[in-house]
Length: 341
Image 1 (spheres, rainbow, N blue to C red):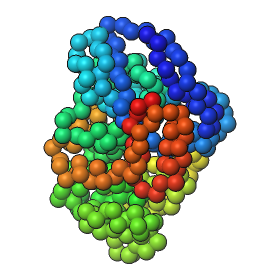
Image 2 (tube, rainbow, N blue to C red; image 1 turned 90 degrees about the vertical axis):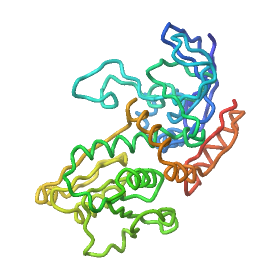
Image 3 (spheres, one colour; image 1 turned 135 degrees about the vertical axis):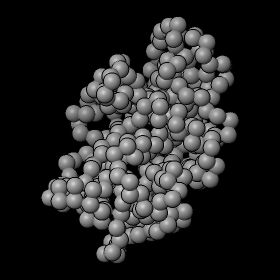
Image 4 (cartoon, helix red, strand yellow; image 1 turned 60 degrees about the horizontal axis):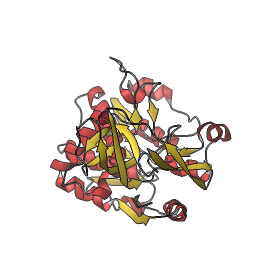
């Protein structure tokens, strides 16, 4: 079957390529309907990656956050027209100790493997999760990002001690908002403290018990467990503050991506006996847990709806360019495209 794939061939240059796709008895053909931009997509689009990385990974279709409708399922597990989330992580083996999103052999859409900017996506039944009727499509579009936060919270919960009195989240952007929303619902007995740099963004965290500017944190503030959602060079300063504010034997989840190595105060990490958990991406179970969460936590779902910042129909390649440019200057919220191309 002929399929049109919209690939980034160099920074800010897309080309439509026709690919002859093959189907097997386990193939599911999905028509993407709503896609959401991630910071990683923007770094590829603007060329803000090392030249060697761009040379190795391009040409490639962008976007790994998305939802669509089933066109044809050769296995018979899904009905035509069913709404499904496309899981970007694609494992080729199983391991008793290593989760699918950490296996070196796994492929990930829009990272060396064509993403969702296609006329149709050819995938398999084990890479799809049904979207429940009460989950809006603009929220379902960025389920992947919510599932990453769900994965990180799940991992840290298995490592942290019994002290959950105060959970601290560093980061006032989209990821910090998502993690904070999940924590407020999943750990209702805990106090949620959010730390950020931008007062306007911090105002969106009205559901938190306390919000603090990172430049004005009282000396007596103590955190039981913490999540770093900053990324970039700023993650160094966030981690330094977290290590200073956290109680002895607390746990820290690092979620923000930095292109360059950062310094960590290992002396204080050792002195306090801290646990540091690095988390990346997510697996099929995290997606399923996320959909169940969205269905049963209405207040959290409404907050996620409020996180949608830009929505636009995409019908041409020029629309794609306009959308990426608009997202680059958007100060708050997830950018969701209605994929009509």
